[in-house]
Length: 154
Image (cartoon, rainbow, N blue to C red; front, side, top):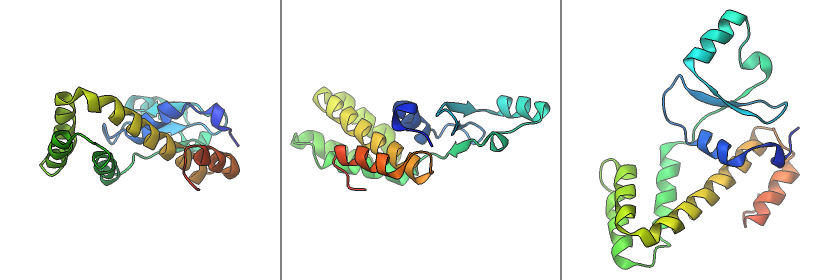
């Protein structure tokens, strides 16, 4: 099993949010914690060489569902003290293309940008640790201790 320090949690967080294309996915090598992008080109090369991610024991990193990211925006909005900013952010996520509109509103309120990024990074770090634990890649007690330090119980 791996240890948390073996994994680049920021890279894992990026992989957990990767909604680029169906044929581009990330996977983690359970032997060393390396996170790799698996593209169509890599898959073709691997097939011609007679190996695949599964044969190497790789664990596919499926991205989080968009409704989870939407909930993150909702949770963040509830912490915003500036009434005008909070109102515009709330309106932004009720429209079509809520993610784009949310970012547009953040551009109007620079004072909300750092708090959003800190909030988002913390949430994604928690998700990354939970994903590692749930995937059986790290010792559950190590994950639980890290989550406890972040104020999350299990």
